[in-house]
Amino acid sequence: MPTKNFTLITGASKGIGKAMAHECASRGMDLYLVARSENLLQGLAQELSSKVQVKFLSTDLFSPDAPQRIFEFATQHQMNINMLVNNAGMGFYGVFHETDLQNHIRVMQLNMDACVRMAHEFLQRSDKKEKRYLLNVASTAAYQPVPNMTIYAATKAFMLFFSRGLRHELRKEKVNVTALCPGGTESDFFGPAQMEEVVKKNAQFMMKAEEVAKLGINGVLKNKSVVIPGFTNKAGALSAKLFPHDMVVPVAAKFFD
Ligand SMILES: NC(=O)c1ccc[n+]([C@@H]2O[C@H](COP(=O)([O-])OP(=O)(O)OC[C@H]3O[C@@H](n4cnc5c(N)ncnc54)[C@H](OP(=O)(O)O)[C@@H]3O)[C@@H](O)[C@H]2O)c1
Image (cartoon, rainbow, N blue to C red; front, side):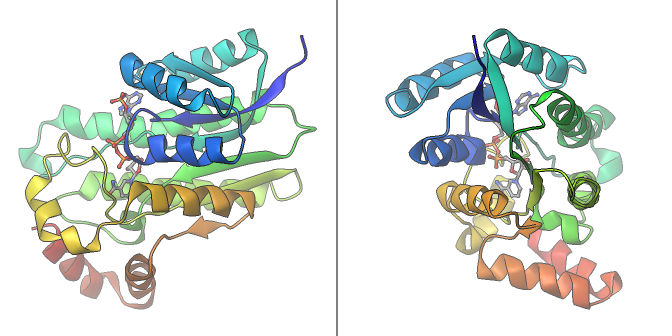
């Protein structure tokens, strides 16, 4: 049976990933959804299946062999992954040395290791004759260190650099590589991150996940190197580039006290 093009979205069960699934479905893109919550993936797949073909796989990306299994499932089901949205991610709020080390390790595993493994499988296995798209979800936290979310911000800086480097490496191949750098976005991120108080304080700056998803998908289709959704987020990222970190970090810290 011939293979068909599919967009693979990690962390598609909730938040920005779920909004991306809706956005892609509205554009007629067939979907392969990945996250841990099987019931949520099943519900979303049912919802979207009137518009496009949807496959899903419940997998824990903390497992180092998950990316290989995800792509093997794609091969078994005749899916060619022509777009990968590396979206699954998590954060943890707290003073570095007072927080359980395992929380930091998990944030690094999911936000960096799993994304690198997914991108590697994608670039090796997907059909090189097809136009391909890689959307890496970083954050405005990539632009400066963020006290009390030090590890999270460092993982997102990694993702931004990883994305920019890959983009140059792949410039002669038919691969668009884009980093999406959202600021605060309404999602399920903040409960597990223990950030309810921080969110309340910054409620006026929060964007809708649907808005962020639309800008991200538009950006990668148009081959933008980086997409920063919203004027305030763009201004924040620009300031972080223009001013020395010794000035910028105390300002960032005020938002995360
Ligand atoms: N919300 C914000 O303000 C914001 C701002 C900047 C950047 N971001 C980034 O945007 C991305 C999406 O975050 P979000 O705000 O949409 O958060 P979210 O609502 O918590 O969604 C996270 C998604 O990742 C999945 N996930 C978490 N751990 C996983 C694991 N071990 N294996 C597989 N899937 C896993 C979750 O599904 P299951 O629980 O079902 O596995 C869920 O679908 C993240 O990379 C985040 O860092 C968010």
